Length: 246
Image 1 (cartoon, rainbow, N blue to C red):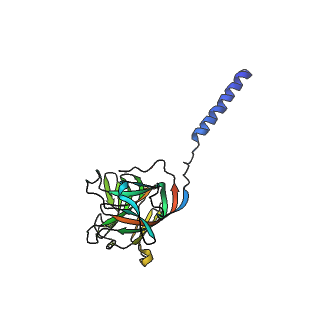
Image 2 (cartoon, helix red, strand yellow):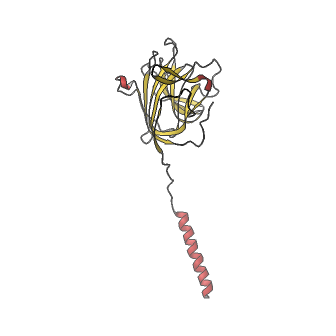
């Protein structure tokens, strides 16, 4: 074999080995590094900021009582329920970030008469789209869907607690503090109700890892209510696009 041909074969062999070696290398998927944020929404401006997306913008405004300023949702109009799975009808989604593991604190109040059975507000998190998310339903009624932590799974919704297992919550027109702790690594979701008033035991404590990242939101099924002093601390990322709205 002449020298020229030998050199050619040798070069081809080395290139082939290099190619095989590259093919067999296992690369770990690059894990997204989240931002660590602390945001406080105290609604100090007379108009709602662009950080919020609403199903029905005309129902929402910034209200005040004394030194307290808050986001208030007027009573939703009488109209057909949203098509598909039954889910909150009116909501405001915080659109600046999606969140993973986080701590959320919020003041809530139902503004309709306490005699209305099933009066409610909801706090949404892990929201992927219009029919995939968690929501905490707080109400003066307790059953399979009222006063419950629920996961909306496309065509169905799944209560994540035994029916009627929670004490009644929003039985008056007073302000109440809700705290949510989400740890995606452990899969835990912990909710406190009126912790500052001495209720130190969790209202809800479960494990569910279905939805990792998602938007956070506030709203109700068909009542009107108020939300103030929203604080979120934890892992966040900038969304690829604004949240889908019904």
